[in-house]
Length: 402
Length: 85
Image: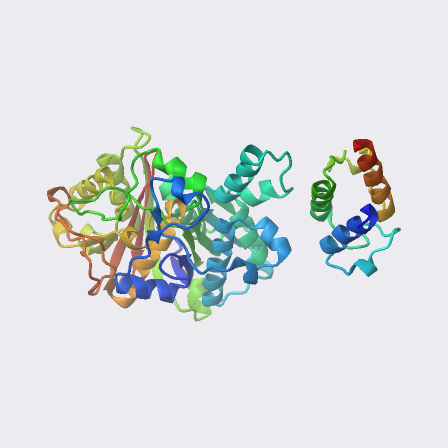
């Protein structure tokens, strides 16, 4: 079977507007979560989030593009540019036909829905801009990346709530591995931090009003973030032949469905995805040095995830490290797995394990090495990235040092 | 500003041209306005004059609104505005 490597990465999120800035912030355990700033925020009971600040789309895109690009598309295009630039690839001819885009998002153009509902319901207008549909559709970002970089192969958008990015990257990986594609641009994005987006989440009563503290006994919920991360996945021999700088190998993945509850996580479903990824990648569990946790900071997720890890790894669960970077950049929902993959790459390439910040009190139900508050320097060869979505849809990726 | 001047301004902005480059007998196509640009122009004109233009992008030629040149658009809008009064 063909092997797949990562040769480019790009991002924009609350921690930084590039991979270098984001990794630097992760290394320093910085918190990107702060007060939300947008219209009607005073009517929300949840007023914090991982907002992308100081992002001026007006300078980056022309007027026509601005009418077509929702914020989630803007984020995606910026991240994709950075990733493709790093890869050094130019997509023309046969390579263009054999390269595609698979991206994850849960909500797509949420603020476009929000702005236009406001305009027709609250302001009583009877007409909306003609591009509302092409702007808000979940595949808008994917299509614009495809157009911008001349990617003419298999391209689509995956929407599996909080696992969207991991499912998307799994599909991109499979396509290269099985020979359907040579290069895939993949990852995900989300931008739900607007009045309607946060109001909907408030309803579930799973959001924290003060901080995201994964695995900490006093954790009280998730905090939402926004942004995007995009990667260039490439067939290994193709990358080697052109002397590309290889960031790491994508070694395998697995997906599972809990088939149980629409919001409560299941230990068995998570464990099946984790052990499935090890099997697929032909990795012995003792090789795994680090897991980037789903780690949302909700009571239910964190204890279920720790129990699943303990089940799969047995005694080795106490030797490995597991951290949740959502404590820093917030939960990017459909884009979260993509941003979290950066922590995996940093672990493999730089030997730096991103911490779980905001950790205050040990929880006997999360009794693993969660790398509390301070990053750790150590060598790891194999890492996993977990994503467990609402609806019980799980996707776990396995990565290996090259 | 007259209806005619305002429409010239909207179409020029959409075509990213100077108003002086737009003439009455210009077709939208000749000004480089594609199908997306056309629906955007119609939207902008509707917003400006608070009218509803009977235009169906599926079958532009069968619509009750003549978009074959800037002049026909202007007279169509003048008729719609007059009907409102």
